[in-house]
Length: 442
Ligand SMILES: Cc1ncc(COP(=O)(O)O)c(C=O)c1O
Image (cartoon, rainbow, N blue to C red):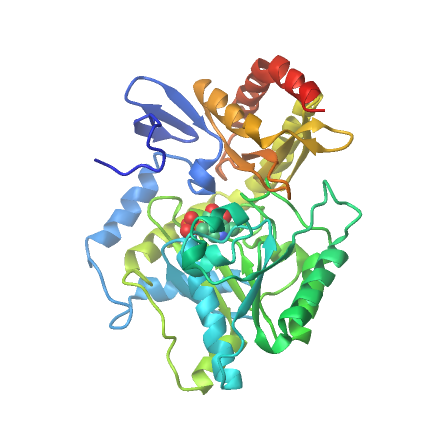
Protein backbone atom coordinates (compact mmCIF):
# COMPACT_ATOMS: atom_id res chain seq x y z
CA UNK A 1 0.00 0.00 0.00
CA UNK A 2 1.26 3.48 -0.79
CA UNK A 3 2.45 5.47 2.23
CA UNK A 4 0.52 8.77 2.12
CA UNK A 5 1.29 11.66 4.46
CA UNK A 6 -2.30 11.92 5.66
CA UNK A 7 -3.48 8.46 6.68
CA UNK A 8 -7.19 9.27 6.98
CA UNK A 9 -7.49 11.41 3.89
CA UNK A 10 -9.19 10.26 0.72
CA UNK A 11 -7.18 11.74 -2.15
CA UNK A 12 -8.79 12.49 -5.54
CA UNK A 13 -7.19 10.12 -8.09
CA UNK A 14 -6.02 12.30 -10.96
CA UNK A 15 -5.88 10.65 -14.36
CA UNK A 16 -5.28 13.60 -16.70
CA UNK A 17 -4.39 17.28 -16.80
CA UNK A 18 -4.45 20.13 -19.27
CA UNK A 19 -3.24 23.67 -18.59
CA UNK A 20 -4.36 24.65 -15.10
CA UNK A 21 -7.01 21.87 -15.05
CA UNK A 22 -6.86 18.39 -13.50
CA UNK A 23 -9.37 15.55 -14.01
CA UNK A 24 -9.97 12.63 -11.64
CA UNK A 25 -11.25 9.09 -12.25
CA UNK A 26 -14.76 9.99 -10.99
CA UNK A 27 -15.35 12.73 -13.55
CA UNK A 28 -14.46 15.65 -11.25
CA UNK A 29 -12.52 18.67 -12.48
CA UNK A 30 -10.03 20.69 -10.40
CA UNK A 31 -8.55 24.08 -11.18
CA UNK A 32 -4.94 23.91 -9.97
CA UNK A 33 -4.19 27.44 -8.74
CA UNK A 34 -0.86 26.47 -7.15
CA UNK A 35 0.76 23.80 -9.34
CA UNK A 36 1.05 21.56 -6.25
CA UNK A 37 3.41 23.83 -4.32
CA UNK A 38 4.51 26.13 -7.13
CA UNK A 39 5.99 23.23 -9.11
CA UNK A 40 3.83 22.70 -12.23
CA UNK A 41 4.93 26.09 -13.57
CA UNK A 42 3.80 25.34 -17.13
CA UNK A 43 0.54 23.66 -16.13
CA UNK A 44 -0.36 20.05 -16.95
CA UNK A 45 -0.45 17.85 -20.04
CA UNK A 46 2.85 19.11 -21.48
CA UNK A 47 2.77 17.02 -24.65
CA UNK A 48 5.42 18.94 -26.61
CA UNK A 49 7.83 19.17 -23.71
CA UNK A 50 7.42 15.54 -22.70
CA UNK A 51 8.05 14.39 -26.29
CA UNK A 52 11.23 16.47 -26.64
CA UNK A 53 12.53 15.44 -23.24
CA UNK A 54 11.81 11.74 -23.84
CA UNK A 55 14.09 11.91 -26.86
CA UNK A 56 17.09 12.32 -24.49
CA UNK A 57 16.00 9.22 -22.53
CA UNK A 58 16.59 7.06 -25.59
CA UNK A 59 20.34 7.67 -25.62
CA UNK A 60 21.73 7.14 -22.13
CA UNK A 61 20.11 5.73 -19.00
CA UNK A 62 22.36 7.14 -16.34
CA UNK A 63 25.88 8.46 -15.82
CA UNK A 64 27.56 8.93 -12.47
CA UNK A 65 28.65 12.51 -11.89
CA UNK A 66 32.19 11.45 -10.92
CA UNK A 67 32.66 9.45 -14.14
CA UNK A 68 31.08 11.24 -17.11
CA UNK A 69 29.34 14.35 -18.33
CA UNK A 70 27.30 15.09 -21.46
CA UNK A 71 27.16 18.00 -23.92
CA UNK A 72 23.58 18.65 -22.80
CA UNK A 73 24.53 18.81 -19.10
CA UNK A 74 27.38 21.23 -19.81
CA UNK A 75 25.20 23.44 -22.02
CA UNK A 76 22.42 23.55 -19.42
CA UNK A 77 24.91 24.53 -16.70
CA UNK A 78 26.28 27.34 -18.92
CA UNK A 79 22.76 28.53 -19.59
CA UNK A 80 21.74 28.63 -15.93
CA UNK A 81 24.93 30.47 -14.94
CA UNK A 82 24.37 33.01 -17.75
CA UNK A 83 20.96 33.83 -16.21
CA UNK A 84 22.42 34.16 -12.69
CA UNK A 85 23.94 37.25 -11.03
CA UNK A 86 27.45 37.88 -12.38
CA UNK A 87 29.32 36.79 -9.22
CA UNK A 88 28.01 33.23 -9.83
CA UNK A 89 30.34 31.00 -11.85
CA UNK A 90 29.11 27.41 -11.28
CA UNK A 91 25.94 25.43 -10.75
CA UNK A 92 25.36 21.93 -9.40
CA UNK A 93 22.12 20.05 -10.17
CA UNK A 94 20.29 18.28 -7.37
CA UNK A 95 16.90 16.67 -6.93
CA UNK A 96 14.94 18.58 -4.29
CA UNK A 97 15.00 21.87 -2.46
CA UNK A 98 16.05 20.13 0.75
CA UNK A 99 19.08 18.45 -0.76
CA UNK A 100 20.04 21.73 -2.48
CA UNK A 101 19.97 23.45 0.94
CA UNK A 102 22.03 20.62 2.51
CA UNK A 103 24.50 21.02 -0.34
CA UNK A 104 24.67 24.82 0.04
CA UNK A 105 25.48 24.52 3.76
CA UNK A 106 28.12 21.85 3.18
CA UNK A 107 29.63 23.94 0.40
CA UNK A 108 29.81 26.98 2.72
CA UNK A 109 31.39 24.78 5.41
CA UNK A 110 34.04 23.36 3.10
CA UNK A 111 34.78 26.87 1.77
CA UNK A 112 35.46 28.25 5.27
CA UNK A 113 37.31 25.09 6.28
CA UNK A 114 39.74 25.66 3.43
CA UNK A 115 40.00 29.38 4.05
CA UNK A 116 40.68 29.31 7.78
CA UNK A 117 42.10 25.82 8.15
CA UNK A 118 39.73 25.16 11.07
CA UNK A 119 36.18 23.87 11.22
CA UNK A 120 35.28 26.49 13.78
CA UNK A 121 32.71 28.27 11.63
CA UNK A 122 29.76 25.92 12.02
CA UNK A 123 26.83 27.98 13.34
CA UNK A 124 24.06 28.92 10.93
CA UNK A 125 21.58 31.77 11.35
CA UNK A 126 18.15 31.73 9.68
CA UNK A 127 14.88 33.63 9.93
CA UNK A 128 11.82 32.79 11.97
CA UNK A 129 9.46 32.22 10.14
CA UNK A 130 11.31 30.56 7.29
CA UNK A 131 11.31 27.17 5.54
CA UNK A 132 14.34 25.41 4.09
CA UNK A 133 13.41 21.75 3.90
CA UNK A 134 12.84 18.45 5.63
CA UNK A 135 16.29 16.81 5.75
CA UNK A 136 18.72 17.14 8.69
CA UNK A 137 20.60 20.38 8.02
CA UNK A 138 17.71 21.97 6.14
CA UNK A 139 15.22 21.22 8.92
CA UNK A 140 17.67 22.44 11.59
CA UNK A 141 17.65 25.91 9.93
CA UNK A 142 13.90 25.94 9.29
CA UNK A 143 12.29 28.73 11.28
CA UNK A 144 9.20 26.77 12.30
CA UNK A 145 9.69 25.55 15.83
CA UNK A 146 6.79 23.09 15.58
CA UNK A 147 8.37 21.37 12.56
CA UNK A 148 11.68 20.97 14.38
CA UNK A 149 10.24 19.88 17.73
CA UNK A 150 9.29 16.31 16.84
CA UNK A 151 12.76 15.60 15.46
CA UNK A 152 14.72 17.73 17.90
CA UNK A 153 16.48 14.62 19.21
CA UNK A 154 18.09 14.22 15.79
CA UNK A 155 18.99 17.85 15.08
CA UNK A 156 21.72 20.23 16.22
CA UNK A 157 20.22 23.54 17.40
CA UNK A 158 20.86 26.51 15.12
CA UNK A 159 20.05 30.22 15.50
CA UNK A 160 17.08 32.35 14.48
CA UNK A 161 16.29 36.02 14.05
CA UNK A 162 12.88 37.56 13.23
CA UNK A 163 11.95 37.89 9.56
CA UNK A 164 10.60 41.28 8.47
CA UNK A 165 6.81 41.42 8.73
CA UNK A 166 5.58 44.43 6.80
CA UNK A 167 1.93 43.69 7.64
CA UNK A 168 2.05 43.25 11.41
CA UNK A 169 5.24 45.05 12.40
CA UNK A 170 5.61 47.86 9.87
CA UNK A 171 7.42 49.91 12.50
CA UNK A 172 10.16 47.26 12.66
CA UNK A 173 11.89 48.14 9.44
CA UNK A 174 14.16 45.95 7.38
CA UNK A 175 16.96 47.82 9.10
CA UNK A 176 15.83 46.61 12.53
CA UNK A 177 15.65 42.99 11.31
CA UNK A 178 19.10 43.29 9.77
CA UNK A 179 20.38 44.74 13.05
CA UNK A 180 19.05 41.59 14.73
CA UNK A 181 21.31 39.59 12.40
CA UNK A 182 24.32 41.61 13.48
CA UNK A 183 23.45 41.17 17.15
CA UNK A 184 23.04 37.42 16.64
CA UNK A 185 26.42 37.13 14.86
CA UNK A 186 28.08 38.97 17.75
CA UNK A 187 26.27 36.77 20.29
CA UNK A 188 27.28 33.54 18.51
CA UNK A 189 30.75 34.94 17.81
CA UNK A 190 31.74 35.92 14.25
CA UNK A 191 34.54 33.35 14.36
CA UNK A 192 31.89 30.61 14.83
CA UNK A 193 29.36 31.94 12.36
CA UNK A 194 29.23 30.03 9.07
CA UNK A 195 26.23 31.32 7.14
CA UNK A 196 23.01 33.27 7.08
CA UNK A 197 20.29 31.59 5.00
CA UNK A 198 17.25 33.61 3.95
CA UNK A 199 14.42 33.50 1.43
CA UNK A 200 14.47 36.79 -0.54
CA UNK A 201 10.66 36.53 -0.58
CA UNK A 202 9.44 34.28 2.23
CA UNK A 203 7.01 31.68 0.92
CA UNK A 204 5.09 28.87 2.51
CA UNK A 205 6.07 29.64 6.10
CA UNK A 206 4.63 33.17 6.05
CA UNK A 207 2.01 33.43 3.30
CA UNK A 208 4.35 35.20 0.84
CA UNK A 209 6.19 38.06 2.51
CA UNK A 210 8.18 40.58 0.48
CA UNK A 211 10.84 42.26 2.66
CA UNK A 212 11.18 46.05 2.84
CA UNK A 213 13.53 47.76 0.39
CA UNK A 214 17.09 47.85 1.68
CA UNK A 215 16.81 44.77 3.93
CA UNK A 216 18.77 42.39 1.70
CA UNK A 217 21.50 44.99 1.04
CA UNK A 218 21.97 45.57 4.75
CA UNK A 219 22.09 41.83 5.34
CA UNK A 220 24.76 41.57 2.62
CA UNK A 221 26.85 44.32 4.25
CA UNK A 222 26.66 42.62 7.66
CA UNK A 223 27.62 39.21 6.23
CA UNK A 224 30.61 40.87 4.51
CA UNK A 225 31.66 42.59 7.73
CA UNK A 226 31.84 39.30 9.65
CA UNK A 227 32.86 36.92 6.85
CA UNK A 228 29.55 35.05 6.99
CA UNK A 229 28.39 33.26 3.83
CA UNK A 230 25.09 34.62 2.53
CA UNK A 231 22.76 31.97 1.09
CA UNK A 232 19.59 32.94 -0.76
CA UNK A 233 17.00 30.16 -0.67
CA UNK A 234 15.02 30.78 -3.84
CA UNK A 235 13.51 27.30 -3.96
CA UNK A 236 9.98 28.69 -3.86
CA UNK A 237 10.32 32.34 -4.86
CA UNK A 238 12.93 31.90 -7.63
CA UNK A 239 13.14 30.60 -11.17
CA UNK A 240 10.70 33.16 -12.57
CA UNK A 241 7.96 32.83 -9.93
CA UNK A 242 8.34 36.53 -9.00
CA UNK A 243 8.62 37.62 -12.65
CA UNK A 244 12.44 37.57 -12.80
CA UNK A 245 14.75 34.55 -12.98
CA UNK A 246 15.95 35.25 -9.44
CA UNK A 247 13.65 36.78 -6.82
CA UNK A 248 16.63 38.70 -5.41
CA UNK A 249 17.25 40.35 -8.80
CA UNK A 250 15.10 43.39 -8.02
CA UNK A 251 17.23 44.17 -4.95
CA UNK A 252 20.48 44.00 -6.94
CA UNK A 253 22.00 42.08 -4.01
CA UNK A 254 24.27 39.13 -4.77
CA UNK A 255 24.44 36.12 -2.47
CA UNK A 256 27.47 33.81 -2.23
CA UNK A 257 25.28 30.77 -2.82
CA UNK A 258 21.75 30.56 -4.27
CA UNK A 259 19.47 27.54 -4.30
CA UNK A 260 16.51 26.99 -6.62
CA UNK A 261 14.16 24.05 -7.12
CA UNK A 262 10.42 23.44 -7.43
CA UNK A 263 9.48 24.17 -11.05
CA UNK A 264 12.90 23.94 -12.73
CA UNK A 265 11.72 20.84 -14.61
CA UNK A 266 8.07 22.03 -14.63
CA UNK A 267 7.26 19.16 -12.27
CA UNK A 268 8.08 16.41 -14.78
CA UNK A 269 10.87 15.22 -12.51
CA UNK A 270 12.69 16.39 -9.37
CA UNK A 271 15.28 19.08 -10.17
CA UNK A 272 16.99 21.71 -8.04
CA UNK A 273 20.16 23.75 -8.34
CA UNK A 274 22.94 25.13 -6.16
CA UNK A 275 24.70 28.17 -7.62
CA UNK A 276 28.15 29.01 -6.23
CA UNK A 277 30.07 32.25 -6.46
CA UNK A 278 33.39 32.46 -8.28
CA UNK A 279 35.11 33.23 -4.94
CA UNK A 280 33.84 29.98 -3.40
CA UNK A 281 34.79 27.79 -6.35
CA UNK A 282 38.22 29.42 -6.67
CA UNK A 283 38.92 28.80 -2.98
CA UNK A 284 38.14 25.09 -3.35
CA UNK A 285 40.28 25.00 -6.47
CA UNK A 286 43.17 26.75 -4.72
CA UNK A 287 42.99 24.21 -1.92
CA UNK A 288 43.32 21.48 -4.54
CA UNK A 289 40.32 19.69 -3.09
CA UNK A 290 37.15 18.30 -4.59
CA UNK A 291 33.73 19.15 -3.27
CA UNK A 292 33.21 16.26 -0.88
CA UNK A 293 29.51 15.85 -1.46
CA UNK A 294 27.10 14.41 -3.97
CA UNK A 295 24.13 12.12 -4.45
CA UNK A 296 23.60 9.28 -6.90
CA UNK A 297 21.42 11.55 -9.02
CA UNK A 298 23.52 14.74 -8.79
CA UNK A 299 23.97 16.30 -12.27
CA UNK A 300 21.62 13.80 -13.90
CA UNK A 301 21.71 14.14 -17.71
CA UNK A 302 17.98 13.69 -18.09
CA UNK A 303 17.27 16.44 -15.56
CA UNK A 304 19.39 18.77 -17.68
CA UNK A 305 17.53 17.73 -20.83
CA UNK A 306 14.12 18.46 -19.29
CA UNK A 307 15.40 21.62 -17.60
CA UNK A 308 16.71 22.95 -20.91
CA UNK A 309 13.35 22.34 -22.62
CA UNK A 310 11.62 24.23 -19.78
CA UNK A 311 13.95 27.20 -20.31
CA UNK A 312 13.19 27.04 -24.06
CA UNK A 313 9.45 27.26 -23.44
CA UNK A 314 9.74 30.11 -20.91
CA UNK A 315 11.95 32.11 -23.27
CA UNK A 316 10.06 31.29 -26.48
CA UNK A 317 6.66 32.19 -25.00
CA UNK A 318 7.99 35.23 -23.11
CA UNK A 319 6.52 33.78 -19.93
CA UNK A 320 8.33 36.01 -17.42
CA UNK A 321 6.48 38.91 -18.99
CA UNK A 322 3.23 36.96 -18.56
CA UNK A 323 4.12 36.28 -14.91
CA UNK A 324 4.56 40.01 -14.27
CA UNK A 325 1.42 41.05 -16.17
CA UNK A 326 -0.87 38.33 -14.84
CA UNK A 327 0.56 38.71 -11.33
CA UNK A 328 -0.43 42.35 -11.33
CA UNK A 329 -3.86 41.39 -12.63
CA UNK A 330 -4.26 38.61 -10.05
CA UNK A 331 -3.41 40.82 -7.08
CA UNK A 332 -5.95 43.35 -8.37
CA UNK A 333 -8.64 40.66 -8.50
CA UNK A 334 -7.66 39.23 -5.10
CA UNK A 335 -7.93 42.72 -3.58
CA UNK A 336 -11.66 42.59 -4.41
CA UNK A 337 -11.87 39.78 -1.83
CA UNK A 338 -10.85 42.21 0.92
CA UNK A 339 -14.53 43.27 0.85
CA UNK A 340 -14.87 40.34 3.28
CA UNK A 341 -14.11 41.79 6.72
CA UNK A 342 -11.71 38.91 7.46
CA UNK A 343 -9.58 39.02 4.27
CA UNK A 344 -6.64 41.42 4.27
CA UNK A 345 -3.22 42.31 2.91
CA UNK A 346 -3.08 40.89 -0.60
CA UNK A 347 0.65 40.77 -1.32
CA UNK A 348 3.36 39.24 -3.44
CA UNK A 349 5.47 39.60 -6.54
CA UNK A 350 4.77 38.16 -9.98
CA UNK A 351 2.61 35.06 -9.67
CA UNK A 352 3.68 34.50 -6.06
CA UNK A 353 0.63 35.85 -4.20
CA UNK A 354 -0.88 35.52 -0.76
CA UNK A 355 -3.38 37.11 1.58
CA UNK A 356 -4.19 37.07 5.31
CA UNK A 357 -7.29 35.78 7.08
CA UNK A 358 -7.72 37.95 10.19
CA UNK A 359 -10.29 38.30 12.98
CA UNK A 360 -9.75 42.06 13.14
CA UNK A 361 -8.30 44.10 10.29
CA UNK A 362 -7.71 47.10 12.52
CA UNK A 363 -5.53 45.30 15.08
CA UNK A 364 -4.49 42.56 12.60
CA UNK A 365 -5.45 39.98 15.20
CA UNK A 366 -5.35 36.45 13.84
CA UNK A 367 -8.01 33.78 14.39
CA UNK A 368 -7.34 31.16 17.06
CA UNK A 369 -5.39 28.37 15.40
CA UNK A 370 -7.84 25.87 16.88
CA UNK A 371 -10.41 27.12 14.33
CA UNK A 372 -8.15 25.81 11.51
CA UNK A 373 -9.55 28.47 9.22
CA UNK A 374 -6.98 28.20 6.42
CA UNK A 375 -7.59 24.43 6.32
CA UNK A 376 -11.34 25.02 6.10
CA UNK A 377 -10.87 27.44 3.18
CA UNK A 378 -8.74 24.90 1.34
CA UNK A 379 -11.13 22.01 1.96
CA UNK A 380 -14.19 23.97 0.87
CA UNK A 381 -12.35 25.34 -2.17
CA UNK A 382 -11.36 21.80 -3.13
CA UNK A 383 -15.01 20.74 -2.90
CA UNK A 384 -15.76 23.55 -5.34
CA UNK A 385 -13.00 22.26 -7.62
CA UNK A 386 -10.15 24.66 -6.74
CA UNK A 387 -6.70 23.67 -5.47
CA UNK A 388 -4.95 26.31 -3.30
CA UNK A 389 -2.12 26.35 -0.73
CA UNK A 390 -1.84 27.77 2.79
CA UNK A 391 0.54 29.04 5.45
CA UNK A 392 -0.39 28.52 9.09
CA UNK A 393 0.93 29.10 12.59
CA UNK A 394 3.62 31.66 11.73
CA UNK A 395 2.89 34.15 14.52
CA UNK A 396 4.72 33.89 17.86
CA UNK A 397 1.62 32.55 19.64
CA UNK A 398 1.17 29.81 17.03
CA UNK A 399 -1.71 31.50 15.21
CA UNK A 400 -1.69 32.86 11.64
CA UNK A 401 -3.69 31.83 8.56
CA UNK A 402 -2.99 32.83 4.99
CA UNK A 403 -3.86 31.53 1.55
CA UNK A 404 -1.39 31.27 -1.33
CA UNK A 405 -2.13 31.51 -5.04
CA UNK A 406 0.69 30.46 -7.40
CA UNK A 407 -0.72 29.83 -10.90
CA UNK A 408 1.37 28.45 -13.77
CA UNK A 409 3.51 30.99 -15.66
CA UNK A 410 1.36 30.55 -18.78
CA UNK A 411 -1.94 31.12 -16.93
CA UNK A 412 -4.63 32.75 -19.03
CA UNK A 413 -7.05 35.50 -17.98
CA UNK A 414 -10.08 33.15 -18.01
CA UNK A 415 -8.17 30.70 -15.77
CA UNK A 416 -7.25 33.52 -13.36
CA UNK A 417 -10.87 34.67 -13.28
CA UNK A 418 -12.04 31.12 -12.57
CA UNK A 419 -9.54 30.83 -9.67
CA UNK A 420 -10.76 34.06 -8.09
CA UNK A 421 -14.39 32.98 -8.57
CA UNK A 422 -13.78 29.70 -6.70
CA UNK A 423 -12.10 31.63 -3.89
CA UNK A 424 -14.87 34.22 -3.71
CA UNK A 425 -17.60 31.55 -3.59
CA UNK A 426 -15.69 29.62 -0.94
CA UNK A 427 -15.21 32.71 1.25
CA UNK A 428 -18.90 33.66 0.80
CA UNK A 429 -19.96 30.17 1.93
CA UNK A 430 -17.83 30.47 5.08
CA UNK A 431 -18.60 34.14 5.72
CA UNK A 432 -21.44 33.91 8.30
CA UNK A 433 -19.56 31.35 10.42
CA UNK A 434 -16.29 33.25 10.22
CA UNK A 435 -17.90 36.54 11.24
CA UNK A 436 -19.38 34.76 14.26
CA UNK A 437 -15.98 33.27 15.06
CA UNK A 438 -14.36 36.71 14.86
CA UNK A 439 -16.91 38.07 17.35
CA UNK A 440 -16.47 35.12 19.72
CA UNK A 441 -12.70 35.34 19.69
CA UNK A 442 -12.64 39.14 20.33
C1 LIG B 1 12.07 28.07 0.46
C2 LIG B 1 12.13 26.58 0.43
N1 LIG B 1 13.30 25.97 0.61
C3 LIG B 1 13.42 24.62 0.57
C4 LIG B 1 12.32 23.82 0.36
C5 LIG B 1 12.45 22.33 0.36
O1 LIG B 1 12.21 21.85 -0.91
P1 LIG B 1 11.77 20.30 -1.15
O2 LIG B 1 10.43 20.13 -0.55
O3 LIG B 1 11.80 20.17 -2.65
O4 LIG B 1 12.80 19.47 -0.50
C6 LIG B 1 11.07 24.42 0.16
C7 LIG B 1 9.86 23.59 -0.05
O5 LIG B 1 8.75 24.06 0.00
C8 LIG B 1 10.97 25.83 0.21
O6 LIG B 1 9.79 26.45 0.05
